[in-house]
Length: 629
Image (cartoon, rainbow, N blue to C red; front, side, top):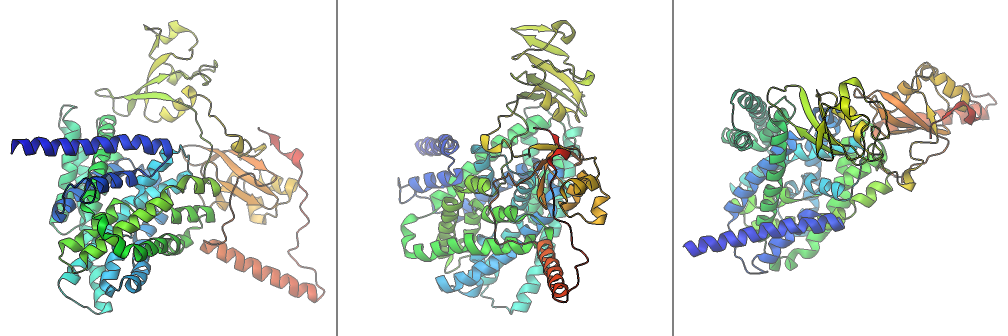
């Protein structure tokens, strides 16, 4: 017995170490990390090194706990501004998108795999949710600076679509296991009522659970070594409590993390570091267990239809669902195309595919094996193409800041204040001798092992370590002072346009200089307000607006989202691929209006009348712009 304990511990630790080392390979070559974890599990399983693991209940239990840890960390690290920015598109994808994907995939699965309709939709529900962990790893590994709106949409979608897919999967398993064959109308009604109850209870428990976590952490004076474990345990209690009363534990734990992470919770830096490590461990354990549970020798019998289903999911089902969900939001077509492509399937899909086995379904193993192959196809095809596609669609933006060496420290009784430690980077504004604001002056400076006051130190030099105690609203401004200059890729040299435009200037001056064809209402706006209006009311760094012969590019925005810097280009400079599909509702309306207007012009021209809304030919006047480099 004792020998077995040592052997199991040795093998388990060796697998975790191998998975950790594989991350170095993934960072080096940009490979999907989840794919490597699954391959390690497959290589050591029944058809590999021969480790026998076929306990479906244990696999599902361990995977569920690991997913709860990952979702809490995901919510904890999601800022509210990202949630507000992407709430509409992301929640649409997480609800309607999951249902559409389930339906489209289920119809094709019914004919390719000869499953019943309910079993086909069960398979569709299992693979309907996305796995953003692999996507964001690829973005970090490839050092891809993606547009914030796209990143936020994918992040919020991934945190909110898992509970819905889990509810659909478990509900269908229970119906099939009970040998029920309900009418479509009854089935939809039961699912809708069950969904509202499940999500409602989960949301209530999650909100109150998150508030309770914050209150307990602030009230109890726990040791810093115990505090992260205490918070993690409380998050699992929220997960279990919601599930015990019939709610969605996964939605509850995500909302609890979202509330806790966006509050003034104590020791937030320590909690973030601990949860980041626990999230990594949870992902490794979950992926390895799911890989061990699979039996690759059973794959050849269903390989062709499963691969076809994976391709259908990538190229048809996901794009259609995304287009229909994002149509009302007037997102640019390249962004919609990228969101549709980055619907990677991962561990959640494999975990849900275990539920048919737990329910004792006749085709449970077939459903599991098919879902596993679909996940592999998704990771192989989409996982290696995220970076190149983002560049092709023009969604990569130059970094605002260069290298930054920064440490956040927390002091007792320092509510709404932070102690920041910076290492002065070569080429940074302070290293070049720029004036440091009074509120940003260091309390202590370390140079060559000696500590001195800033007043006695003189000008800061590269390599100095400085300590600054500031209110929590200033760190972003300090980062700009102590960061080195961002390295601009030659392809990005003209990204922000050759000329600078003052956002406070009147749009009428823009019309007089370049004749882009602005309406009377638009000419009354400032240039900054004009760009914001054309972007649907929200502007972000690197957004672009094409107006007639010119293109306006957002160079910078303030903390409130107001444009503070604009660039102007006389021709499009971003390498944006033309996307023939994914028209939004706004674009469709614009095209209909343009078609009607042109049709009326042709009618008037044939009748010999001059069009009333004819505009003079645009004559761009470059001298009106100010060179901003």
